[in-house]
Length: 143
Length: 143
Length: 143
Length: 143
Image (cartoon, rainbow over all chains, first blue to last red; front, side):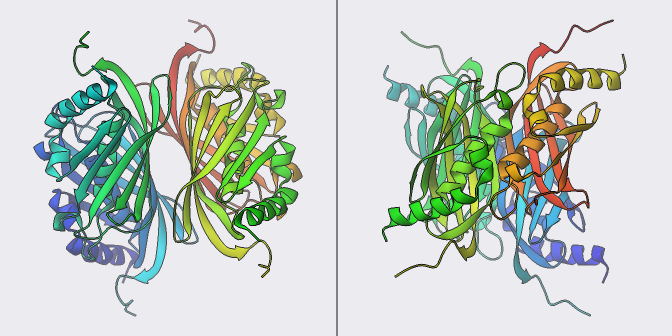
């Protein structure tokens, strides 16, 4: 099993269980070792009266991208701390893309960065997540 | 108009527009100058396969409490930066309470802290938000 | 040994070793279980050409207050993550006071908040630190 | 004047005023538009009794790298919010390298990431800073 196959297998296991991300209409567009790309449409249910997306949904999209990126090696990781900077509003009807990459990994801790951008490439928010290994696996490693 | 009345009026204006918070089933339990308390039930749509709440929904609850707390003086404020530490999982069926209070206010910037706890008082997450005044108001101040 | 005595004993052990805090001229003004207060004078060596204190020294003061507050129970804790919001500049010759308090504690993780203020009470910065128990102690518990 | 020359000129102006960074023995190893690299030796004055560097000095190094990187276009920027994750201890006698790069820039806000690593490339800490333009310049733009 290659590292890419393993990343795909972890993502498939997580995705099957992830009512939340699917319920928000997220799509899992790309997974590879320590990286993930998800997208989501800003719907009426996500906006306030001015048509701009509630920060919680931006965060949820980034948090899901982080979760898929930090769980690609068959070791389960959880979020210890996350932060987000909002740079400009996202609007009703826009499709947002969250791209998560590994920044650093030392021992059981990892730092992942996620950018949220529009189709046109405008940066909406920058997210950083710190993960911690739980010590358990998604499935039995096959030889 | 007292400060308490003003806080209520701001909250009423925001709540009417806030499809997102209402769509997630949040309740606005308390608003006063620079403070707010909201609650939310963890539903099936918010959990992963292990029955624990997706971090994005915890964040959304905290973010809404922050938004209501930092918008109680008729000056519109937006979030510049938010961070959250996850301390323990929240479970399907639990009602969560987010309590937001002002920590510090200097010039156009404010720091608000939000605790998310279960009915039994177990702390699920600690959130901190930094707000910035936009310079605009919710409604014409009445004399 | 009371909880207060234990906090004092932990602080004395740490302080003896803490060349860094002493070298910056910090004073340990108060220690009690899960809280600490330190002060520091903004010296010429800490400022830039405009007479305002370099953020690194503000951070160091807050970080020390955090360290003393989260190490008051004979269990050694280390910082996992820290964040700081700068609210206004501190000036050459000002004495700054950092007050650290426990915000939440769950399992091996703690959240501590530190305010840095001038003598006159103006808030300079707000700091939040997340600690993690190392599992080791400062000294043998005496019965 | 090229963008590189402008970055060098801004850095020279800041460095001349920066008693703090120079007093800590930092070296400004590289500056270019929106990036900077500084180094610092961990001295006895920076360590606790166990020979590991106080977090405040790690933060100061990262904060200086952030400051030089976000001030390379003749517009003065200040730090609004900074966070740091400590990944492993730095030891007495080690030379640390802080590398700051632009992550995103929208309007008056910028996000910069700084890694602190040893000579051997071990990651000690990851820092993220959010900058904000003050609207003023370092010197008169020359035509």
